[in-house]
Image 1 (cartoon, rainbow, N blue to C red):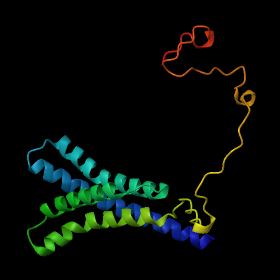
Image 2: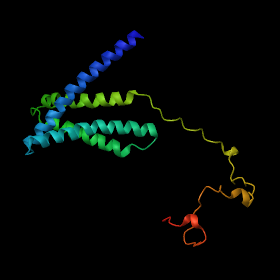
Image 3: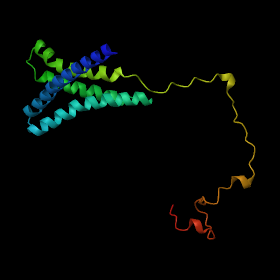
Image 4: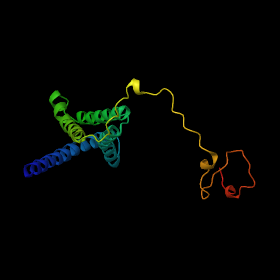
Length: 180
């Protein structure tokens, strides 16, 4: 058990170090690119926050949707778009050479890989799908319920039942004042 705890602590430390440094580099590149293209400094930081945190949020959203069995297509497209936007900012700020572009892309790619690994490491808690019912066991017609005598259908006296719309029943005082 102790070895597992130590390994978890080391993994968490590495995760925080990579996340902090890669995130700082990515934020800085998006900020600098925004400012270089005419945006005020605070908008540069707002752009950086929007681009970088949106990728993290979308990763979390995909994980939640998968867990609940909901479609992830559109959210996945958005995640790719924001990841490419971050990567483009990294590369645009680089020295215009192949190695400059590769080196500049490392923080963004490391950050995205880290998010992917962390978000995909938790086990899914979605309920297992129910097995399909064999065709031979299916009933094409619903079973007919026996008719219930009218006395048993009436609700208890403490429950107010509203009449159908358009039906006027002036002698029913319990529905007076209810607006539909």
